[in-house]
Length: 139
Image (cartoon, rainbow, N blue to C red; front, side, top):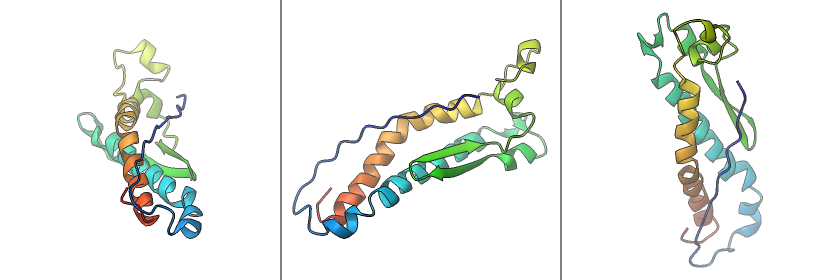
């Protein structure tokens, strides 16, 4: 399945003395606020995929459920994957077998991605507000 990048726009309004702790806090911006926002999104994406796996809907033994993981693969990049389970593409609905059978897949990862697109800006704004507060502003 093709991986899609997600663009997030963040608007932050600052009030009060903003640059009181600038040197120490600015150096941690990339490794802290953004990293935590990516971690929040990865954890939520994993939760969203697993939420769609239940008995009668992609969950029989629990093996596939346990193979779904979210990882931060770079400071600004996360990935939710199924540890390359052989039947993963079939369950998702993107495998070649889906073209020849009635089963069209559950679209768990696609649904999770769409959910993350909706909440990504809010998650980043929350982390940006925390960053602004550490900088001495009201956020």
